[in-house]
Image (tube, rainbow, N blue to C red):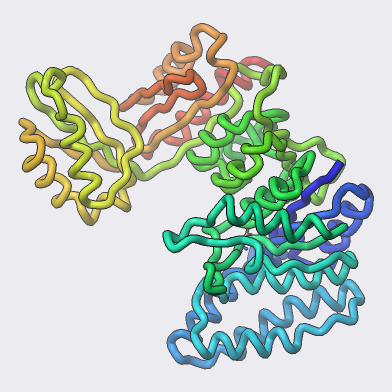
Amino acid sequence: MKKVVKFGGSSLASAEQFKKVGDIIRSDNERKFVVPSAPGKRNDDDTKVTDMLYECYALAEEGKDFKGKLNEIKARYQEIIDGLSLTLSLEDEFKTIAKNFKEKSGKDYAASRGEYLNGIIMANYLGYEFVDAAEVIIFGENGEYDMEKTNELMRACLSSLESAVVPGFYGAYENGCVKTFSRGGSDITGSIVARAIKANVYENWTDVSGFMVADPRIIYKPKSIDTITYKELRELAYMGATVLHEDAIFPVRSEGIPINIKNTNSPDDDGTWIVESTCQKSKYVITGIAGKKGFCAVNIEKDCMNSEIGFGRKVLQAFEDNGISFEHVPSGIDTMTVFVHQDEFMHKEQKVVSGIHRLADPDTIDIEADLALIAVVGRGMKSTRGTAGRIFSALAHANINVKMIDQGSSELNIIIGVANADFETAIKAIYDIFVLSQL
Ligand code: ASP
């Protein structure tokens, strides 16, 4: 059995947290491949090292003095090194970083140093080999990482090693220039390593005991999810559930490797298992609820649009021409609505409207702003009657006006559009009917 273990920033924010991580790794000799994030916040008022690096580099880019900021970052690492009683020195590394900042080596290079340095400390602390992610994670010219090339390189490199630390969050273009994933991207690195070594499990250690049925900022102490499928997770992560990066499942999914979300501060909790498929029923009909605010609905009306071939394509063309992706397109006989992200759409709205008029010649176009989308997700919905009915009666009882309904053809989710102002109340109403009233 081989396990890949990824630790998030809060699990590695201080020497004390590092020690917990060390105990976790040493307690199971299958935990041989480790992916660390950069040190996160030690308390609510603290700053993540990644954010400090972005700030520091911004000064360098403006030609301002960045030494003070860089020294603060150095102090964060020194505190960890001293707390672990290591003899390691990062002096030369910081000299190189300062030199590269002066030469304007790029924002991505700057941010990646958070994981890079933490990886060096972790490898030293555990006595594992350090592998620089820039040598094994390759990005193509389009800015996306090359999944197959990366897999080959990573596999070739790790197959000869007994144990290794691969820092999260970054890789490099073929020319060696460092490139990062989007924020939280160390989760993707962990998944890439798990695929490359064909791990039996990818353990993702964080500061919560797995996924919750709903966002704890909205629902007080929500129930946890024991098992969730990759597909369900995709829906929830995309709609705002933040425990795991939304792209982290792709590498492991191709090998059917399960992900276990675990809590560094409570290592005996089972956490959440993310799997390809399961015969385990979720505790409730729904597995989870997630949602996001900040959408706009563009309502397009034209008499007899349903019989006009190509109408939908022409409308969507206007969005494509302006580089706007759409979320949902519910339609009626004479109407069609396109849901888009408000911040993406706002600055281009008039261009899109005139584009629709030019391309599709509708009767009217009406824009409605400040909407939220809520996804109710659950593999159990397929075999249960009345789920939609229960959702809508709960919303009606809570006095919420439903603006849009979209049930995916897989019957895995139901998406509901409501006003931003009704977002929290709607989530509470759905949680109550499926979870609280089942207790
Ligand atoms: N350190 C990076 C961030 O703060 C990446 C990560 O933690 O996964 O987003």
